[in-house]
Length: 343
Image (cartoon, rainbow, N blue to C red; front, top):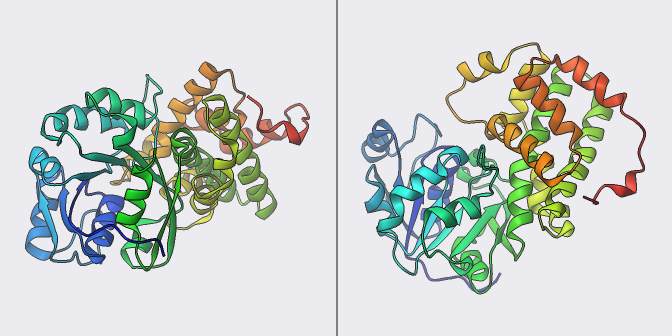
């Protein structure tokens, strides 16, 4: 294994399932972790019982995880800060946190989504919210990683995207015996893969909810990857990134794993439930619901055809029945497959 970065202080902003799992992992490999939670009951649960019963029940947080509800305190506590809040609140959180961030601190974004309305990626949103944050102080963490499996110390491979030497520093900081971190310089491709795979997982879930079988599932995953790659390349990504952990790896996991909230949303759509009914029954965020709107807008701005995204949007926001969406996708004009990476 690559030589590890010395252990030290590390902060995690956001105590949902993924943020809590990353805090557990970082503490397990020796870091002193400050975990910020918006909900005061989550802070109390962690500090008093060492558990996050609201978002990641069943796991004990190590003693070297300190919970706080003070955002400035959490940000100021460490030279490396992991941003793990839902994408639709990233700008607001970082506008509030920016004054407390150390001048040389690194921000590692683990949020998978696209900002609504502006359709900006997380590196742009955080860069605008934190004045003076250059590319050398920003990294994106993505890849196939269910929170429960990371918290349970099961083997996981993930990727960090940044300039050098920042990418290697974060790699060494977070790598452990069961958590293998690879590096890439392609921030755009890494973020696009992490965001758009959630939309495809809703499509696959809808197919599964309709009972359409393994052939349909495989076809949607493959054509979903083509669609993600088209959009990412148009935005400036390296297409090879989408063949890696941030692309096909995360896509396969989210489309097929039973722990996938976005796949669960799709299954509910396939079974006839509406978006409103689904959202009302959820406490944790399924990023794909909001990302579908952003991705639909992004495709139009980039001039990229995104038929699966368009039909997921129609199911979620226009009331299109899932079975009709499948029928329309299958009835589209015939194409040549090898054009899939072209904008």
